Length: 200
Image (cartoon, rainbow, N blue to C red; front, top):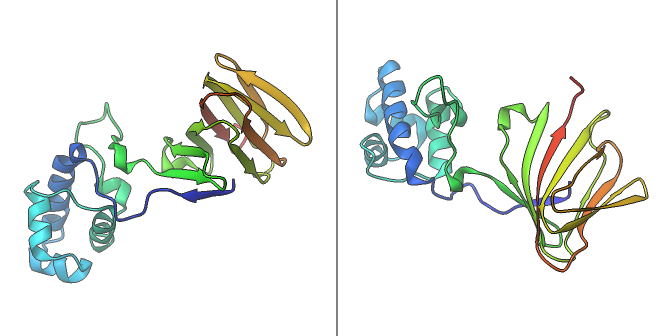
């Protein structure tokens, strides 16, 4: 997909993930028997900032969490996991959901699927203003795209063949061929998009 990132890595996380984050940072730091000063030296994050994170007194940036994650020998996904238990595996705040934008600036894709599963399945929330078009190069062989239209009207082109779909309809098509999605209507369009990258 010809997209560009909308959100940069230094945006703050939503406050609803901060309590679990602070507890996780403190637990990992103590497990490695690191003082605040030692973790500060290894991560490049100020000692005072780490202390505030652990006490849930600040809302850290993604960049800060990433540096702490590396210093604690873990991933940012693991650090941001909720402590809610086995019933909940992940809870992303609004600012933690990456967004991509089409080259014409009229389409956006919010990545709402699990990032650790992108080799197998990708799940997006798609919005397009009138006339907006998202053009995609072929994905890997066997990829199938699934599109469900929530609002508006979209025109799907795959290998030169065109289909038009409207709100309440769904369509599946070959994602391993050049394809595009265009808002063919007069109002904003909204759809859910799922890419199955590998056959089950």
